Length: 450
Image: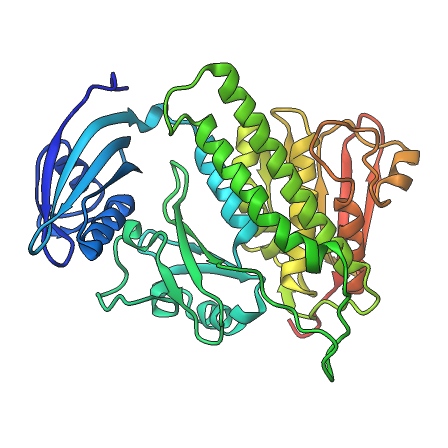
């Protein structure tokens, strides 16, 4: 870890905002991050400052932060526009080894963008598509095209605005880029997150500039409620709560400067409370949907074993943090079913998430898939304290938390999960006994055509 020593470096850019000359340590950082000299600036904050200064013709300065494979750096950058390009003056350079940086900062950003994203995709190391999921209806065409184009670069389908360069660009240049989406009147921004250490590839999130407007009382459309947490209040609450989380994470990780431990811990409490509030908002939004008598999930052809593997992959980091082993269905296992993919994944994320949360450290959570008597089944078995017969009867009740306090839960997860299962002509049941863990089973109609 550095001692916070003041370091000054100078650099120059041309009219295309390419770095054509740079002194150390900026030059080494730029090249480790995948850049070349001469070549495009690969640090988004610095590139944005250079573009603003050149466009305005005025001297501009601000703090910048970035990281490469070795270090996370913070510095003060001053950009002076010239006749053609700009001159960059760097001071107060401070570098922190990535080995000393907690994963919580990344987790905070992931939590934030996941709440806001309309589309999520898993990419390989070359930014080619592996899996795609989306919740925004104005991204239906894009999502379908991406699913059909697995193995191709994601930029073949969602092109960055005003960028005619050969795709895909270095991921740092695409992180934060505005994306053109045909058929959507909203503006979208791409958020690219490298997978944690030990895994290769990226997570891609497309985040909208605003919630999707809802039409009401038009011929041929289902009547929308005029009031309710999901349609009216949730979009208003999400933005300020997300801002609170982001600011608290900045304070907690001390990116804005050194801070006493008690204040850093206080900021962590604020961020945690904000994340719980966002989770509650999401639960209440879904609750309004599933309690609507007209709610009808789409009857997709899905594979329960595949959905289970995806759920285990998403929650793998959380399980690892608690030293819990997740055993998911083998790659060759299959349980074809009829049900909406997104809603089925939502149910399994809840079941597996609960199993990870309430199992003791070092335990094993087993997810098994099978087809029995024309039904596809997934069972999530944990090694927690188990449920008594009375607790099993209450487990699926609305706002029921079985006496647990301080775990951040809303008491809605299992209620919503059972409602979703029943809406897909299936069921969600539990078998348990005190001291013997719990086994939750999701059952859906099997797919006879598979």
